[in-house]
Amino acid sequence: MGRLTVEGTHFYTVERPWLDNEPFKSCIPDGYYQIERVNSPKFGDVWEVKGVPGRTHILLHVGNTAADVVGCIALGSGVNATLSMVVSSRKAMARFDVLMGGKNTGEIIIRTGSLT
Picture (cartoon, rainbow, N blue to C red):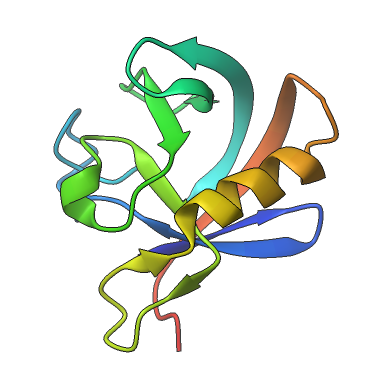
């Protein structure tokens, strides 16, 4: 579980657990990243996180649990009571797109740690 901040708005993220940044198995390291709008054959119009050392094709897409992502990040508006999944993912992705204001690129901040 993590947080993503854009334009001062906070979202919650869910990724796989930390496994030394291993592609398709690990979450990405905390940091500032460039993002770019892309058209994914599987997920359609989504955002790709760029500049993660040793990694490519990391998408921000709709999902609720770590099982829904394979090296990618699911975005949510909140978390469930046990802090094991994000909720309102489609709503969060729509809000994220609005905040991006029609831009095709931007920056995000990823922070992991306690959500309480």
